Amino acid sequence: MTRSLARSNAQFRRASTRLPLGVASNFRYWGDDRTIYVKRGRGGRIWDLDDNPYVDYRLGYGPAILGYADPRVDEAARQGMEVGGVFALSTEREFTVAERIARMMPAAELVRFSNSGTEAVMAALRLARAYTGKESYVLVEGSYHGLFDAAMWMVALDQWDPQRTDQDPPVRPYSQGVPEAGRPLVHLTPMNDADRLEDLLRRRSHEIAAMLIEPIMGNCCGITADIDFVRAVRELCDRYGVLLIVDEVKTGFRVARGGVQELMGVKADITTMAKAMANGYPIAAIGGREDIMRRYGRGVAHGGTYTAHSVALAAAEKTLQILDETPALETIAAYGRRLQTGIKRILDARGVVHCFAGHPSMGGLFFAPAPPRDYRDWKRSDYSFYDALARELHEEGVLCEPDSREPWFVCEAHDDGCLADTLAGFERAVDRTLDKGGDAAKRAVAH
Image (cartoon, rainbow, N blue to C red; front, side, top):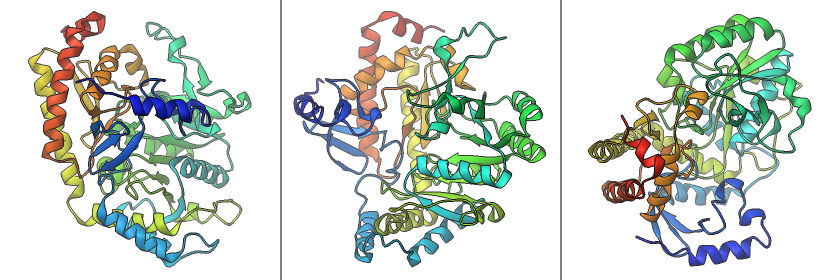
C-alpha cells in the first residue's frame, strides 16, 4: 500500500505561510512531506485530506476515549450550547460534574476546573507551594506535565554515558526560552528508586513543596511504577512534609474509574485530570484534599475566562456518566488485550523480541525482552526498529505515534473491524520492515 499525501502536502505548504511548521502544535508536525491533515473522524478511525483511512491509536493523545464524534456526548454538548457559553459567573453543572468526579476519584474531595492538562498542573503546583510555604518540587525523570516553564526540565540522556552508573545525566530545559533561573527549584529522580527519593527528601525536604508523578508514564512508553514504589512515595511524602501530586491527565478515568490511584491503592494530596474527561471537548480539573483545596480564593489565585465552559461541562457530564455507569472501560481494556495478543502472535512468529508496558487502554510496544523500569532504561534500549515500523504502519492505515515513547490509546469505538484491519496491516508492516533489513531489523530478531 502506498498512500498519496498530495492534498496534505499542499495544505502543509499553504499552512506554512501563516502557521509555524504549518501546524498549531509542534507535535503535529511530522515532516514537510509526512504531516497529516485530518478531514474527519468517526469512532476509532480518521480520514485525512486525501481520504486515506486510518485506525487511530493516537486519539488526540488520549481524549477520544469513547471514539470520535460519539453521538451521546455530542448531543450533550449541543444541549450545553443552549446554556450560552461563558458568563464570568457559575452554572449548576459545575457542581454536578464535581460531584461525579469526587465519587469516581475519592482523592478529589474538592474540585476546580481548568481548560487543559497544562493549566491544571500549573494550578496544582501553585497550590502546593502556597499550602506548604516552600518553592522547590520533584519530577520523575521522563515524565511529562505540560508545556509550562516549571515542568519543562529533563535529564539530557543524549549527553550521558549509560555505562557510567556513577554519574547522573545533566538536567536541562527541553525548550529554548525556559529561564535558567528556575533550575535550582527543580529536582529530578528516577522512577522506581525509592532509595534515591528518600535520600533527596532527607537532604532537601525543607525546601520541597511537592512531588509530581505519573505512575503510568503517558509520554514514555507507558513505563509503570511498581506499586511498592508508589506506596513508598506516599509514605515518604507524608514523612517529610511534601505534598504528593498525582498527574492523572492521561490515566484519569481511563485505566480505571478512579484512575491509576484506584489501581495502585494510593491517594494523592492533589490530583490533575483532563484527557478522558469529556471525549475531546476541552476541559481539565484539579482535585484534592479539602484543607488544601480551600486555599483557592484564600490567598491562592485560580481562574480562567473559558474555565467550566457550558459546552465542555455538558460533554464532561455525559462522558463521565458513561465511563462510570457502563462497561465502557472494560470494553476498552478487553480490546487492548486482544490487540496486544494479536501483535504478539505476529511478532513471535517472526522471532521479533518485544514486550508491552503500561495498561491495555494505553499500552507501550517495546522491542526488548522486558519493558524499561525508568527513563534511563529506555535510553539504553534500541528503539530504531519501532521508528522504522511506525512509518510502515502509517502506510497501512494504522496510526500510531512515530515516537516510540507514546503509548497506543484505545477507545470504546474500536471494534472487530478495527482489530482485523490493524492486525492485517501490522503483519504487512512488520514484514516490510524486516525485509528492508539493516541493523534495526537484525537486532529485533536477536535473542
